[in-house]
Image 1 (cartoon, one colour):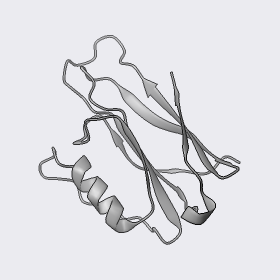
Image 2: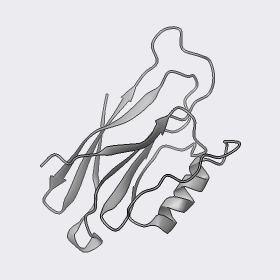
Image 3: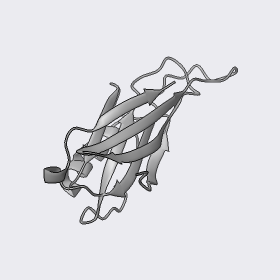
Image 4: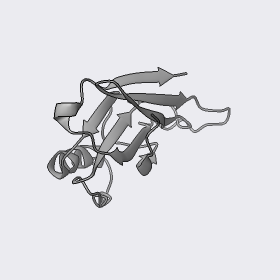
Amino acid sequence: MNRQTEIVAAGSYSGIVEATNVVVRTRSDFKKLWAQHQSKSFPPAPLPRFDFRKDMIIAVFAGTRNSGGWSVEVKKILTVPGGLSVQVAVEKPKSGASMAISQPFCIVGTKKINRSEMGPCIWTWLS
């Protein structure tokens, strides 16, 4: 079953420089992730409001890229037996992209699945 998502934040610059995928189920864990993500921003953006009683965060960080113009997007989150399948697309820059170093990211919210009901999350990177 395809799950609805809501974009919480997406962009080209993050303090998280290594490629990583994260499922966040609590406000305290989100606060830590957000602080790391905003560590290169001044002033840092405020922590987005989010209701962790009923929802959870899926966050994808593509790591440091050697130019601007890169983007990452959570294309689809599917409920599968034992958990979730997350499909992620990374788009390469088009001609004329800036030479600025970038760290593309996408953070989305979706309905919460309790840990006891969820096995490992399956991440699929689409090219």
